[in-house]
Length: 340
Image (cartoon, rainbow, N blue to C red; front, side):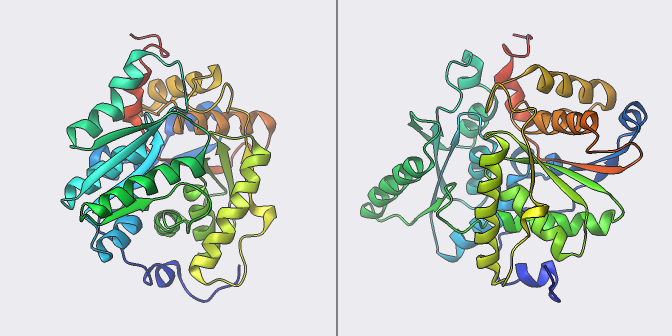
């Protein structure tokens, strides 16, 4: 991607609500660096502030920017029961005096009682959000349509709703937030060889990868699959990157050779705690005093460890992991973690 415009130049063209009050820190993980024989750093987007932080704060700056520009008074979003996105949306809605309607999808059926009552579910209730249920976990189009039906009803009541879409048929506004993150990271630390990010909806992965390339950085970016196998996620990333390029008015997108997806820590599936994920979660806590979440960041760190074993991350390389937050979800996994 050859561009003379900066990341900031691109982002200036979009309405943006101020939710990030400061840059998030980049910290050196000294004990893990020694144990793993790499130079390991972590970008602490779990400390992004709003409603216990996480990567969605950056994404929501652009969704709420558009919502406020449209004079919306209600925001609707869909996600898993322990979704960080819906919790952060509820927090942003509270900040701007808007009503939040959160649709919770059954993506991980059969979980323990705490999963449905604690963690992000509890926090969203405290934030005053309204919950609605969607019984299917792998039907993005259907979930979005259910939100549109609810939004249509709200309009008849005289309200002005704004829907945050997660399906592929809409512009990936949230990815803009991770273009900003990539640019921020290159100002803080520009000499890293590898970045490791979770790859689910694709917005964080696509935005971060595009932002790095627009900033002229050539580091490998490994997207660790948290919901789909690597081939399915690769195809999804192609689509998100193409839509992001269209949104930005770019003539070309990130080349396929730069899209790296890895699914070795995905089993037993989305929102499920496999052994490698549990090991990674405990290792980060006991080596560095940093908590990861079972759905995204523990799988991401498990992916980093797997890539090391495969030799795709090499000894001595400078590696940065993006901590996208999600720690509140830990409390929904008490039984699965063996601490109930």
